[in-house]
Image (cartoon, rainbow, N blue to C red; front, side, top):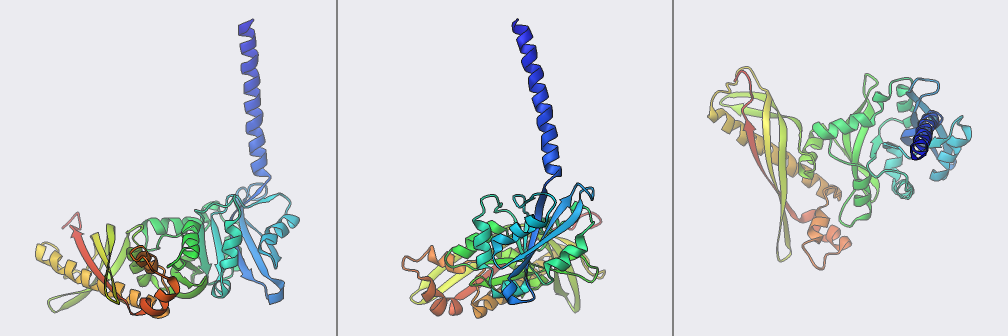
Length: 366
């Protein structure tokens, strides 16, 4: 009797599992799961915003990218507008990337960030970016392509091994609501081939886009940021009377900050230690002596120090603080006050950079 009951129970469990699996597949196939969503300003300011979202269409396109749009004055109602015109329920729980047009970013993204962050289903690990092109234009270039072409894949791999600094919604919220910090996010555009690329890095102040770092500045910022210290960078060098460009890859590194104060003089020192490997160098350059390596290390250190110092001075002149220098000083001063710091201290404080580079042997053939 017990064996019979056990068999019946096992059979019922098998049927339940089978039905559950079938039900799950059917639900996934009948939902528009949004992975990328962007916002543009409507042509008439009174019309609010246009929201454009991308999803993988498993019903009609075999998993290829499709888009859906909605417009409204209220950010939260844009998704509702999408639902009213969709043939399947629209869900935003799997969003991986939020895109703001440059125009919106310059006016301010605070209300968007506030609305998005209040949704408990939205992951704080999604990417937040500013685009030179409208989201509508980006979406039209991606429709019909495989899901692997979704742009968050490009951002992810460039942050891991390229020159793109690390950023996601979590860091944006921290910079937005924390004291002594400013928001910074990737800046993308469609290139001449119609491909979306990370062409720069956007720097904000008071939730408004103030400047965009170029590719060289972006790599320097990534090193000062210190999250993932990897990437390739070219350096101009001179050996004797010969000049050339070397390209090396930063394999890993570490950054420390040292704060000091004497009276009203405030000083912050960034100390960078980098391990690198040569990727490309001029044909005339012989890489078989330690002397050459020492020369290249010294010149590389000087160039990187100069780039970093110029970038930090640029931030001070603009009044932007994406590296959170104010927050770091706040941790070392009992009576720190944000308004007073940025009005009286930040622009004239001494910020120094010390870089140490170890170039490893370049490998086979040397």
